[in-house]
Image (cartoon, one colour):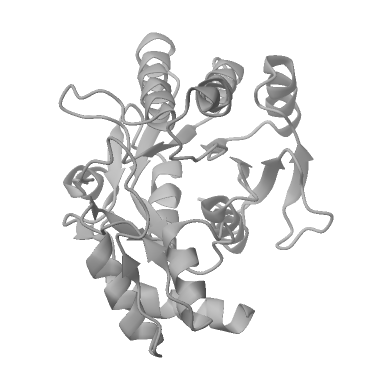
Amino acid sequence: MWEGTPALVTGATGFIGAHLVRRLAELGARVHAVSRRPPDVSGHGERWHAADLGDPAATAKLVAETAPEVVFHLASEVTGVREPGVVAPTLAANLTAAVNLLTAVTGSPVRSVVLAGSVEEPRDGLAPGSPYAAAKAAATGYARMFHALWQVPVSVLRVAMVYGPGQRETSRLIPYATLELLRGRDPELTSGTRMVTWVYVEDVVDAFVLAGAGGAAGEVLDVGTAEPVSIRDTVELLARVVGGAARPRFGAVAARPLDRTQRSDPGPAERVLGWRPATELEEGLRRTVAWYAESL
């Protein structure tokens, strides 16, 4: 299905996006990779495009020029900050960009559009816990509207806490704790009681490829493991994998307000896509530690 298929990937320099670009290229797709600041060199034969998806005209031009059959929208501003000053930029990066892209593909011959949602989106009538969660939830609502009103073949994958090799955002929990432990330093963390749902990056890519192949239009699916694990248990496992004398310092950092337990239900993704997470947490952490150890 993928050989010669024109596929558009936004957010292609990001953690998931970079892995997805590589996988699609390996499958034979003609990959159009999008970023505000593309790299100078193509790593896997993909063609790079510079575009600001916050600009509706630039987004429409991008879609017209690339004529994609499949679109993966991963461009996002991921932040857990709870400050009024991040509301507007988070709205533009996560909602406006998604709406501009959905508008641009409406009425086009695109066969599948896959949006990256988030496990942080509120459920059970709860208020969003952050500007990021609010913007992601709104984008999911717009995606459902575009499908219902104008038959845009869009699905949303609500991705859990992704980890794995190649994550260069070193302020994120797993990269930060891994690098500190590898350097023999004690990572400073919250109490660690928060329960989060982890998912290995290559398993996430599997889900996006399956959704992009079709059959998920109109669906909102969780991409994560069924059982959440506390941050404390996760980092203690990570410390055992790394070895050495360094130990995590829990309680050294204050918890953020409205940090709730994360939950994912992979059942619908298994029924619709035939997807389920394949990588156990310890094995995924071992692969992750090995990558960071080589990069030091």
